[in-house]
Length: 402
Image 1 (tube, rainbow, N blue to C red):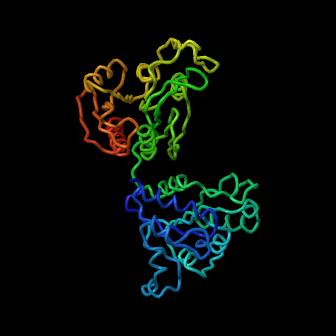
Image 2 (tube, one colour):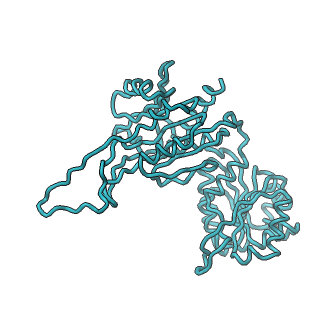
Image 3 (cartoon, rainbow, N blue to C red):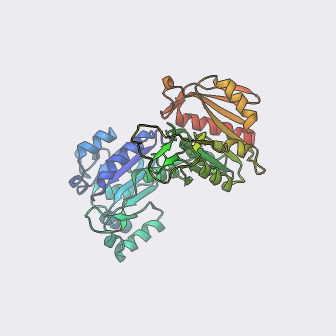
């Protein structure tokens, strides 16, 4: 809940990118934000008040001359009763009004009256974005202190045309909002952290591989939490369907040997959190061609080789980080196995969890972990993986700085 109780005044202007604002509202609310929507007349040509209001769970404001809203000078109240004004999409027309101090509708009047930070996400045709008038307006807004994310390069909605003009994706905008509203302390500022996450895929042939059920959710959450605490984070991730965490350098790999090489290349570091569920074995000689079924029904015999133990390698490395944390996904004897790994792997902490099928943890959204160190064992209650990440980062900060 990185935006818990933050009030975001979302101004939706009239462009095809307004459809992305629906997902943007959902993403902001997922993180605990209160979204107060304002729509221009043109925006209503692309998305409906009903859809926006339903997703925001809030009244949609549209009319500067609303008798009901303006009885208490509604546009001033809206302009001030928020933590951030977000304009997404920001069209050429609305940017022109903002840059020149024009106020002839609710959205432009709010932007003129607000004393809160303003973040705009421009979206328009590439020719419009490169027009000298729009460039002048954009430069003026930046010099006035308005923050900007995008526009991005890509295919346009009208088809057959590409260039810079696409509105930033909702998760990119959310990450920028989080950054702007993040007033938390940065205890790990100046510290370098390496995190591994997700599974590894070990090829059998060009179309088959060995893997596990790791989703990468916990590792990605830890990388994001470390970044929010001010650390310079490199995330080495196996194949996952998750978006890259904001403010984090991400190295994408597939095989365990690639993950090891990427981790070692990032040393030295202050912190290493080895969360990835690395495959213990790989096929010794993967086939360069798809293995076909045999006519007689015989089954191919695969010879396996042991994969590198990345946690152990880091834990005993000459450039060993000051704090090395490993994860132990176990199906039985959780604490006993975790204690054994602590010394064998050269770790300072082992975060152990039960991933037996009945727990539903592997690939799920919640986790129940036990922290094993040389000082003893600490059992944490079940919580979301984001909360596990936040609590673990607090432990990391305490051990490094305490």
